[in-house]
Length: 277
Image (tube, rainbow, N blue to C red):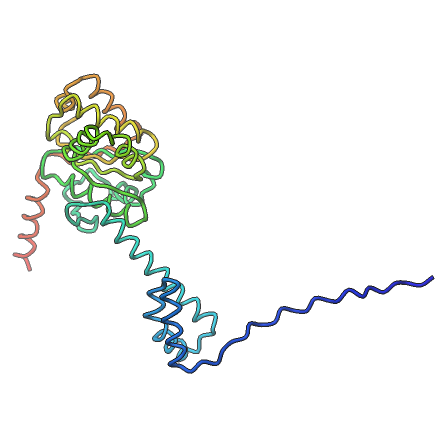
């Protein structure tokens, strides 16, 4: 009895890719051309300098490749942050690092840190800032919105009056569904000056559509100079006002900024510190 021997050829190991021996000028030209094609602007501008530094530090080829690719990723993240902040349409630049927490002694640093992390946005929880004019509400609203945008979230800042006007115009142009849908897709809507102006019944109902579209699904952060008990004057219809309060306070983070002027206190403290120095 004879045993058959398999004649099936053994697969050969994959051959390493053939590499071209380019001169330094030719390699630099190839890098620039390839990076333009692949849309890698940071690699295009930094690769040559990083290659020189890698040679001095005796990095491996893999380490050098990792460095240039990470540099591209970091730069893209930075550009994305700038773009997100720009798209949010904040009226001015405000950051949490610039906020003097001494103005709000009842706001624990841990609470502010939690809000800055943005976890509440991922859960679709509302944030309500209540206090008199000049007490730091808008600063906090913009600063928290900026932090959220820099973390990659879709954010939009708008005053209540501007939003209502936009909705009325969209309704007149038969584009209300599109506009409501655009606001519903945001990760965070920063609604400022709620309660500063009285809304007519139509405007109040349109604003209610935005709030309802985001209920328990996407966060709204709003700032108001009126306590909840006075929101009926803004929405004219007591039942509508009660429905708005109910939706904006369910699982909400509510921060009272009080009545003392944040701007006046900050200016006074700055003058005292300058005098002491």
